[in-house]
Length: 297
Image 1: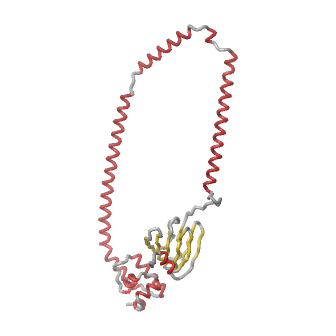
Image 2 (image 1 turned 120 degrees about the horizontal axis):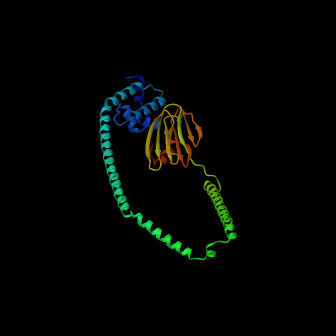
């Protein structure tokens, strides 16, 4: 056993919990080299916190953990494979059901369409015959009228195009005015929708990003349902800016971007934040517990 691992085991689980905020159960498990209740990502985060907090080299403990997870990996993979096969089988069943519904709908549509075509098929010869009879009646009626009644005054014929142009111009002017009024109302509506009731312009929150300067463990809690999540970050990580969060970092060498504005931090120890009402605030563990219903991480 390495000298640094022996130094670590001289600490109590309670002391480690108080100084690093690693849960008491996990702290005791690390001292007992019991990795059963942790995953590999979580364990690496804990070891990084302990190495930084106590200036230790825990490579030996990390190697033992890697051997444990490698020996237990095949069982987990087989379980995941069976779940994947069951899920794929369900997906294919759903596809068959959807395909059947589409086929039935298509057949129904073609049957109804064919029925409509039969119902609306009419003999065109009957229509043409009716038109011819109507034209003959109209010609006979017009031929019986005096010539003066069937002729238009020359002046009236000349005035007809001018009247038509006047009507067309009036309709075009009215249409143009309506279009201009619609555009003006649209502009006013869009301007009012951007302003708040107090007349201030509302700014939409568009981003909330974590940018670590080096690999860091992050634990975060959704304050709506108090669900806990954790990640080991080595690159940019985004959170929903519309939600409220509690954030716990393994170290403070990070940048945080909120709506394009970057806030820089440089702290070798763990650092805690609250993000409430779109406002980021650095807090202590006492405030963290108060916001988390009296619980630590």
